[in-house]
Length: 265
Ligand SMILES: [Zn+2]
Ligand SMILES: [Zn+2]
Image 1 (cartoon, protein in one colour):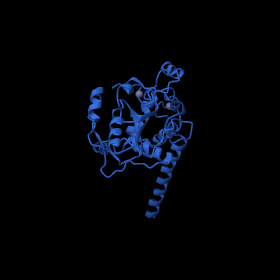
Image 2 (image 1 turned 180 degrees about the vertical axis):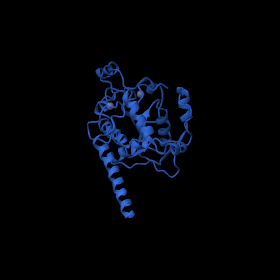
Image 3 (image 1 turned 90 degrees about the vertical axis):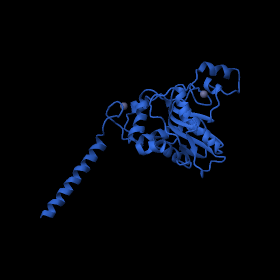
Image 4 (image 1 turned 120 degrees about the horizontal axis):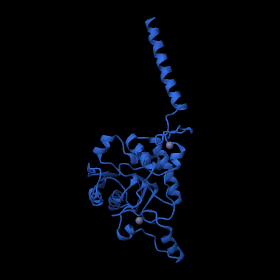
């Protein structure tokens, strides 16, 4: 009889946890950004209003880095029938390692907290949702590539966090685009300083030579799609792109979920 009661306890325990699972399916927790009740069945824990509030890019922008440009400056060149590339002041003044960078949205408002969920809470469904947005950006911008590479974390940081947030987006993106995913191709050899606030100069200095391609990796003549969560100054993408180009990559296009409004150097 004792065995049976243990069995009953076991079943009762199973039913309780199954019940909890059902409750969480039908009555999920609120939106992780605004706490509104989630009305749509989705694995993404963010409500439609918050997702719809992200400051999506897509208007006229710098042809190189994608920075939004005033329509006034674009209008002038178009009116003149100029075939000259429309570049923001930073891209006119400096030679970046990447060919182009495009982003889904500006890094402000609700998307900042959404990216925090990705970065610190490993919300994988959100990574897949962002990947789908980047598929749309890649289609619209006619971005072509042979392989997808995430911006790597230094191994100490990766060990500490357990994952790389760029991979949560890059991996589903590669699958959706039908491209090979090469997470191990690039490596970060110099850790990011612990200091959270870096001046622009310090940011550039901290990533100079901080990335390398692995000795056996083959990038010769390949077009690389380099994926990260946020482009702040462009220094990280620039350093990664230079390492890839140094290893023979034919082109490097950066694709990020969000970007700072400006990236002054
Ligand atoms: Zn919300
Ligand atoms: Zn630019």
